[in-house]
Image 1 (tube, rainbow, N blue to C red):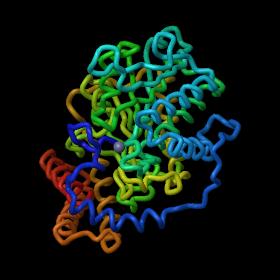
Image 2 (image 1 turned 90 degrees about the vertical axis):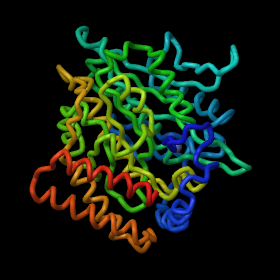
Image 3 (image 1 turned 60 degrees about the vertical axis):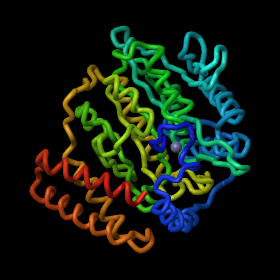
Length: 407
Ligand SMILES: [Zn+2]
């Protein structure tokens, strides 16, 4: 997840919101430790058994990507990661996405220099009428590297998303029926320095962007917002293609994770790789479990990932991608946002959970005052079963303010 800064330095090197961040970090250090589940420690990938995302395999991929060998996936570590991911694409017998290559080099400022590399593979659609339309499942693989000798493993940010992408790819590659539309699996580089990889991709796309039926990206899907919203995954983007909600509902039904719909304007800036696709009006879905106390810290380690949750979210994404790749028609981009009424429920649930953990999170008086007011507003909206545009605007403004205060 990009920290919203415009410079090349990540949040780890910036004083932004230092006091509140420090308070949360202090509260969060203990939450991180509490969240450590028992793990196997295995680095080798188990053999595939089924098309559904496999928890052991997801964990093995996260552990591999977050290991010291990958050096926080920047510089030489990013190159090593890219080589590993290309091997995974080849093992799955996927076709290369970029003119016979799995790699898309991103030129640097000086002639001949390369500053990063996007990765991509594909499965050609089986339906002659639909195979020129595309579904993209993506996750950035770069992270913050090693700083002053300290490894930033980036297990949640974004080894979790990359593991999902590979497992969804495996589901398609080993599925009984091939997809009707073509499906691309993309891992962007240079997300952390300002979405450079995805910006370059949309400027040099391997397929016409107006033939992309759905772009899906996931960034940080292995934890809980603020360490406490344990069963939620947030999904942004349905406001521009409301028809996607039925697929999401269907895919999430019965799984141990709750989909919290939000409009993308809840985040002030485009915080991940959906941004360049949103600008080009490509229907998109952005999945994230949100910022948490380990965000952009050396504590973002593989031991503290919630693997059952990552597995459930990967299955939800795989289901939506399957629907999009097989449907006769896919939802078109609607320029006027149709914001989901469910936003009020999402905001209410998050606020209730955060307030339940008021002590552990060391929330200050101003934050809890705002949160209680916003909770009352959300409950009122849900009680009436309707939300006016003005009410929505207020709810989003106060949610943004709360996020700025507590993260
Ligand atoms: Zn990040």
